[in-house]
Length: 421
Image (cartoon, rainbow, N blue to C red; front, side):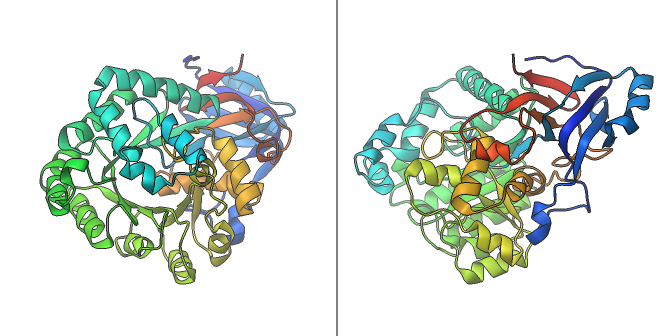
C-alpha cells in the first residue's frame, strides 16, 4: 500500500468526474440518480480535503502554482470512495461447511439449530486472540481498499458475551491504528441468543443492558439489534436500543430479513440511522420509511449467497421516496464479499436500480446512514478527499462488467492508499 502524503494531488482529464454535488443531505426519488457529472473533469486536493472541482483547463493554473502531483485520468471515471455502511468484518475462520450444507438443501434455520450459523462463528471468535483477529481483518481491509472502498462500518456480534463483544470492539479500535480506511464501530450484542442462554432470554438481555452497553459506550458509535424471526422481538430490541441511546449510541436495526416483524416501524419510532435488509417490508412500511429520515439499507449480497430468488424491493422504496443505501453485509455466513462493485451489479440486475442510483446509494446515502454525509460521499470543495479512479470511460460499465475489479487507484484523506500494479 502506498502511504505517501502529497501536499496536493491533481486528478486531471477524467472522462467522467462523478461529483454528486448538490444540496446537503441524502438523495431521494429522482434525485437519487443525479451524479453531477463533469466531463473532462479535474479535482484538486490540499492535504486531506478537496480544494477545487471543475474542468481540467480551469484547474490547471492553480495546480501548477501548488506544484500538485498530476494523476492522468484520461478514459477513466473518478468518483467518491465507496462507503460500506453494514459489515461484520471481525471474525475468525469461515462458514464454508454451512455453505455446502445449504447447497445440499438444508435451510439456514436447520443449520443454525445444528450448531452452525452465528453460534459457529462465536465459538471460533472466542478461541481467537486479539492479534489474530487484527491480522485477519487488516488483510480484509486492504482488499476493501483495492475495490475502491474508503469507509467501513464494523459490527460486533460474534462475541455473544461481555468479554468477547468487548474484544471485538477493541479489535476495531486497534484496526483504526493500522489501516488508512475509516472505521465506524457498532455494538451488535443482540445478534443471536447464545446456546447457554436458551430458555433464559431475559437474562441475556439483562447482561447486554446492565453490563455490556455501559462499557461498550466508550468503544462504539452505534448500537444494532437483529429484530427478526428466530432472533429478537420488537419489544426486546426496543429495550436494548433505548439503553444504548442513554449511553450515547445511535440506533440501527437488522429488519425484516427473514419475516415481517415490525422491525422497520421500530427503527422509525426510535429515529434509527438505518433499517437494514428489508426483504419482507409491506406497503405501509415502505410509505413510513419514505416519510422518515431512517435510511433503507439494502444488502443484496446476502440474498445472492443464500440462493434466494427474492431481493429487497428497491424500486418500491425509491419510487416512494425513501432514502436508499447499499452495503456489502460482509460476513462469513451469508455474504462473504467485500466487493462493492459487485453489489452495484446485483442492485442493477436483481433490484432494477439504475447504475446512477446504485452509485449514490453506495456513496452519499451510505455516508448519511453513518451520519457522515457532511464530509463524505461527494466530491465537493471542503469535503474529505476520499475517492477512487475506475478504469472505465463510463460509470455504467462498473456494474455492467460484473464480478471484475475496475479500481485503479484509491485515495483516503488525500493520500493514495492503494494502486493497481
